[in-house]
Length: 343
Image (cartoon, rainbow, N blue to C red; front, side, top):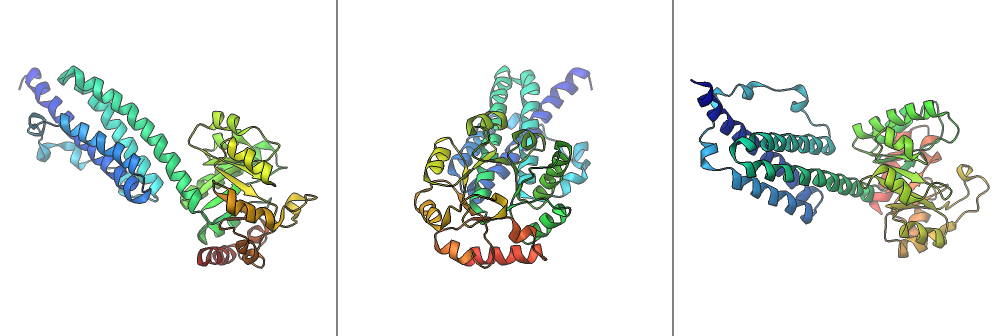
């Protein structure tokens, strides 16, 4: 076979394989957008791209397929054999689609000049889809998280957090005011990996730079920290940004500035906020009626007073000592989650 004939057969086979690969990957993503996120807009975007790809998949390309003689069917990698979380599954298939579109863009230029242009544009659409999907997925997990652990300094912080994650916890904030940055960065990195291993969100307290460095899901800001707009500029549009609030005015300001969620408290006096007057249950009740974004009651909440806080209207709560100082963090986490879920 001459080089020319070999090339004329190879290009259609490459295009056929990658058209299939791109459509398959998009279908996997579409199913999660539809049934997992229940987001019709994202599902429709996936569907439209699949249909556009199908328009290029003509009979001449399909007829070039030679699966029995394709050496690639025997190739695999251990990472392809397992998926530990939805996040990993989605990321793997987004990469699959993006790689396939890049192949279609380059080899498509040899088949039809318009094909290269089409798939270059589509590749950028998938980048946007990835951003929108990640933002939506993180926000869904935030909305569904009834319990939020805010850590306090501890030599056993990793063991405590993992025990809580094993108890069903899905949202963790690393809060450390006194450690040097080298230690803080190291622990943040380990906690972020641990949370993602359990398909939980990891939020960094105060430090936007560390949140960015360890690829945290977001950052939580106090009233004296940088503006939300600046944090958004640094972290990008897909990370979660929370803000502590103690009264109605601070809530209104945080929401106007674009906070994805707010902390409401301290509900009770707590050494975590030494000297700070409790916001009380009245502010909890106000938040239940007025907050348009997810909010977490916080401050001195434990297994004893949690029912009182829930009666005031709280459905999502953040705790520190209740878990960090518990003899059995997993058991306490399970107990708190049970109370929040049942009610």
